[in-house]
Length: 306
Ligand code: BMA
Image 1: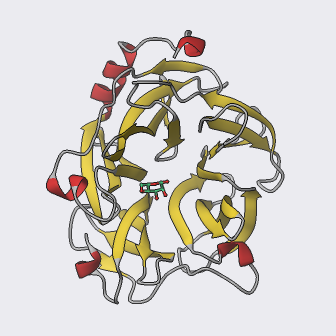
Image 2: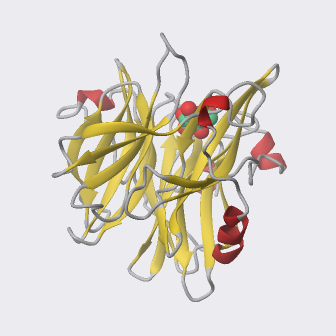
Image 3: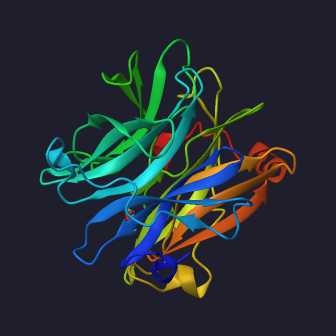
């Protein structure tokens, strides 16, 4: 989908969250208006490929009266189904005057949203919840940025009893350095997916070049009961900008995924992503291929030498 498919004027549509919803696929797209601010709008499809039914008006707009931290828009949602609460949690970037932060909202119908509000202060984004408690706690992956001291944008994990208060924060995965495809800056893409072998994690890595940044995706596998234990991490990226709609647009050479849905009968993972911050695209992979690939990836014992 592009802005041309949208039922109301929009500059770009990209970086959607995704979930299975009442037997269909639901995307919550980031829609950027001509001021430059984003809101979220849902699109629903029977097969997750075509014939998208898009809301005629924005589904979730910044709520400036109660949530001034949403002043410059809400961006890049991730959707996690929380079976325990019978609700979906949406984690998104609220672009505040003090910088981007992680905010959270709950819904059971994608019509009404109950905001929990900011859960991580700036600068922090690329957050998603695990779908269930782990050892009695909710767990959130997020990506703060450090500009002084030791620069780098690494992926962190924090825990909570109530989804509101977060603590026990630890680095889950360091960005590599130097020439690596994920040297300097990494961030979670879609929410972690539970498999028999571990939590499947997909993340973006940014490589800064003379022509600008390249956003590509890599894979990792986390221990089911202690996700801080990274069992596998791909040395190589597995998905990068290749087609014209990934290479050209508002921000060239970007693939950025916020959601995937699993088709259990076909064993197929459908990954929805933004191309060049301008369109929404779909890529599929067989889950068994991904796990087989990860089994051959190294155990990341050697992080200090990245
Ligand atoms: C990141 C996020 C994404 C965007 C990407 C590339 O920092 O803001 O929304 O797709 O940059 O521009």
